[in-house]
Image (cartoon, rainbow, N blue to C red):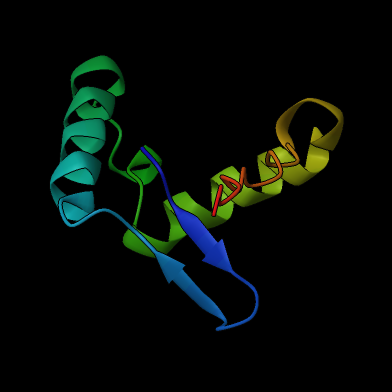
Length: 74
């Protein structure tokens, strides 16, 4: 699932069906562990992923590709 952090606008954009996907994750957690305390909250899940990526920044933080601009042949 793609979550976009925009540091200019100071926004986090989640997919339109983020809550549905999160509900699915929590359903699996309950099937496996049956432990309510392990369920993910709407913002807690994003925070957990962020912290894990920063902790493992050598593998998780990726620099995007430079945009390709097609040259005009006028």
